[in-house]
Length: 181
Image (cartoon, rainbow, N blue to C red):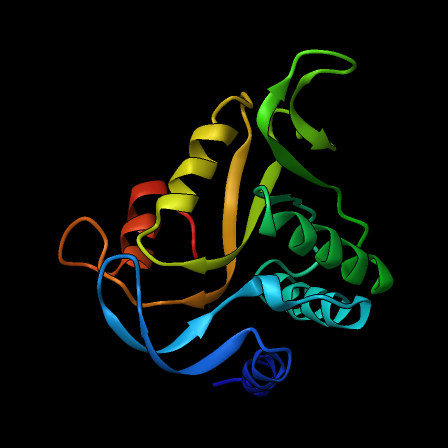
């Protein structure tokens, strides 16, 4: 495991995001840890989180420019903090997020921020993957954007849950949509 990934785990524990104990997932599975990204509550913590996501971005995409998409609600702060961290390193990437309910007044619409155009790549930033439901929901939302391609999804934690079949949810999502998670 790369050293920054070990540092990331330590950061999650220090920030109270990663807790150890006896927990039960929605699916009824017993697990020895729990992840709650909502525990990131300070400017320093969100800046640090953004730096880790930016590092993952650079590791996978290098200097390639892609638009960061943070699904409402927890993904919003992840997208913003990662975009800020990347800009500090000289890579100014746009970001956007969705509204839970489309706005029918003012500028209207489902999206807030930069809306990608045909031919542009998008990177989904999420907190956890359990069954892959949130990523599938994001793909349904992003399908409204004609000609936009999802290049990758970056997540904090893979809970290693099974998907709809025998494979892990992460593997199913990668096969179903053709991008790395």
